Image 1 (cartoon, chains in turn yellow, purple):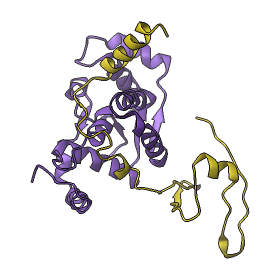
Image 2 (cartoon, rainbow over the protein chains, first blue to last red; image 1 turned 90 degrees about the vertical axis):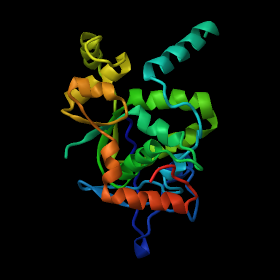
Image 3 (cartoon, chains in turn brown, green; image 1 turned 135 degrees about the vertical axis):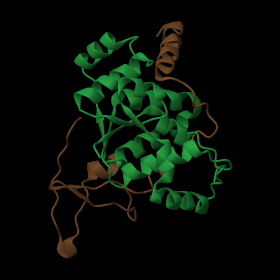
Length: 85
Length: 160
């Protein structure tokens, strides 16, 4: 897992600026909500544009669920070999 | 309670949930993810992530960015990469339990990390001495509140 570090200054009112590269990477817009998570001396700031769990609810509604991981990989492999990739 | 492993069916059942006929399995799966979102530490592997990715690419590829964003936001979920040692262990166990090779790799990761409990509907893991945590979660005090919240969002449970 890659780790990128950014420096930002605490301004009056304890405001901070999210570095441009991070804003662009995570598509953070003014008005978006962020969460402050404090864990073992670290501060994590996950984006809560939408509840990440609710965001997934039924996004592939009705798709078959009784399928094994090995079958998925095998079918992906078959497709790849068949198409000559 | 130790850290639990999060298996592929939990993501898949939640993503395949039917809004007008929400099954108990789909609801429990969503509840598990919500627990992790709220701060319960859990572990999964890149293998699980990739299984879900391949499954989703087949049935709703346009939803893949949402899945990735959701994984990013699940900061309490640690995604581990299986090692070659895990693969060797999986090969040694092949045929020993009713588990496929990808499950056996996950099993090797769990054993390496001393994880004895798994969130899954795959009963094969219990024969390998891993405790499956799933259906009993519907008895959790917070499960009712989770269902109420889903109902407020328009979901219609097919169970009571």
